[in-house]
Each structure stands twice: as structure tokens, then as C-alpha cells.
Image 1 (cartoon, rainbow, N blue to C red):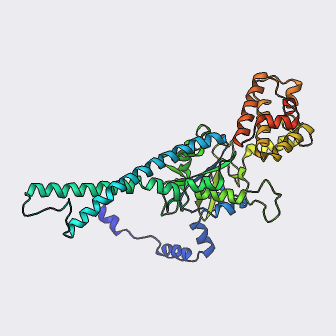
Image 2: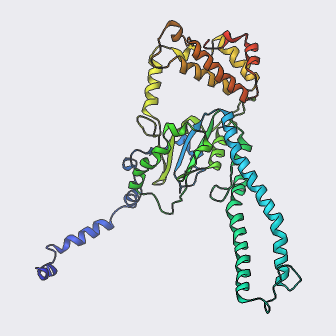
Length: 407
């Protein structure tokens, strides 16, 4: 049977030649389409990124997976967390300086002994035993390698903390904080540790959700950015600086058309980006439904409902309310504009908590519960103190605590 199978010939020899001819007659556009996946063949759950994100995406390398979200933790917490690596790297630097102080004379004396000068480290080979010579060579070799390991491993920490590395595109934590300071809302951009030298395959893109899902869990994103480092993802400080550079508008001066930001930070909140098939793809893990362009179905439903339903808590704090205007202007004068928006979010949250009784005051966006009021005031005080402003100063400017929006 094997011999018969080996002798078997195609029934119609012209079939093969026709297939080859048909394959050779493919148009270049068809061949290109087969080489690059089309929009309909994109791996789930990713969708093409909208064009408004491309000024930012164009600054990113193609060989990493990028995770972005907005860090809204209090600024005093960010300061305390950042103080830990500052002190650690300072201690390492002091330790290395002490080691240099004691090691340099030792190495100078050893080098002098090599060239025949009198030195405590000079050895008379003719008088020393073989065991003593082996011990001397071992001790000096061990000292050299120990210092090399000390400065190459521990020394890289303060160096990368100050100046970054080639992998981080020479942007480090010090440049990050020196440039941006500590803000109420900050972009946190994490990139995968491993670089890719080959393009992504469709199956690899599809399995990314199982790797990036835990990293984008709400419980994990509730931490401040400096606490999100792990073995799979590292903070990309260059990308963070680029995002703020494209989005920043000076609060103290009105923006002109030239100063208008090219990036809305909310558009990159809770996103995963990967470069695949000659385009950037986006996925929002914490959204109910992902629609093309990175717009979530939940966001569209909320926009539709807000356009068709009566105004409730959110619009109770409308900008034309004199109480809101006084509070907003007082904070702007104190360079605390972001605190105003954060306070409105607090009021909206407290007046729309699930299970609370919807009384007339609640529907008007007023915090009724005394405990909730104290909690909201404590958070407002913390936000203002982070800006170097006293709560009493603000209350004096607006006419008392009863003039706070939501009270």
C-alpha cells in the first residue's frame, strides 16, 4: 500500500498549475491585506484607537504593552510614598561614598605595589609560601569583585533614580517629580518589562487580557502610582511626562488656540494600548462594553441618559448657582482650582450613594447626614492643606460653612 501511495499521481495535473497561476495573479492590495489584519479581524477585546489619541501614542515605542490610568490619591500621600525611595537612595549614596573614602587608598596602595613601589600590599614572592600567595590573590580578587558588585548593583539604583536608564528613555522619578510636582490628578503609565523583537500575533493579543486584567483591577489602581511597580510592569516616566506636556494648560492664564491641549487625560484613563497590525489598539478592562475608538458603551449610555433625564444631583451644582460661583472664585484666587472640581465630585458622591433616602434636599444635591458632612469637610481640609491653604481661610472668604456647595 505504501508503494501504491508513493506512485499515486494527481488526477488532473492542470489543477496545480491553475492554482499557482491564480496565486501569482493576486493583486498587491490583496497581498497587503493578508499581511496586515483588517479592522474586522482585530483580536478581541481590542479596538482601534481614535485619532485624537495619536499625538500621544506617537511618542510611544511599539515594542511594549502600555497601561494608563489617572492617579487621584491625595497629594500628601504621594509625597509620603515618594519620600521612601528618596531616603533609601540617599542612604545608598552615603554608603557608597563612605566605601569610596576607604577603598580608594587601598586600591592606590595595591597599584603602587604592582609597579614595585613600597606599599603595605607589596609581597615578596620568594619568601612567601604557595598557600599564602593563593590566599593573597583570593583576598584581593574577592575585594575587587565585591566592590564591583556593590557599585554596579546598588550604585545603579540612585543613578537610575536621578537620571533614568536607556530602557526608561533616560527619564527617572526625580525628573518626574521635579517637572510635575505632586498633583491632584496625575497620569500613571506602566509599560511591560520585556521588549518584543517580533510583531504580536493575534493569539498573543487575545491572551493579553488575562495578563493585564489583574494589573488594571480597580483595587490595584486605587493605590498611588509609585506603589504599582511589579515584575511585569514598570512606570514609564517619559510617557507620563509626555502625557502631561500634551494636556497641560496653565491655570493662571487663559489658554489660546496655540496653548490648547492636544490630549484629554480622561480619554486615557483605565486603558491598555498595544501596537498591532500597523496601528494602535485600545482596550478598557473596567468598562462594561468596548466600542470602536475606545469609547465605552457605558459612557455613551450615561451621555444619552443625561440628555434625556431630568437634572438631579449633578446639576444641583450648576455653575450659575451663586453659592457655587463664590466658592469656585475663592479657590481660583487661592490657586486651588482642582480642589473645586474635587469638592463637586465629593458632593455628588455623597448625595447619590446607593441606599440613602432620596428626600427633597438629597435631590437638590445637599448632604443631609451630619456624619457625611464631617467626612466631606475633613476631606476638603486635607485637599486644601495639600495646597498650603487653610480651610478657615476659604470659609471666611465665602461667608461660612453654610455657604459651601452641598451644605
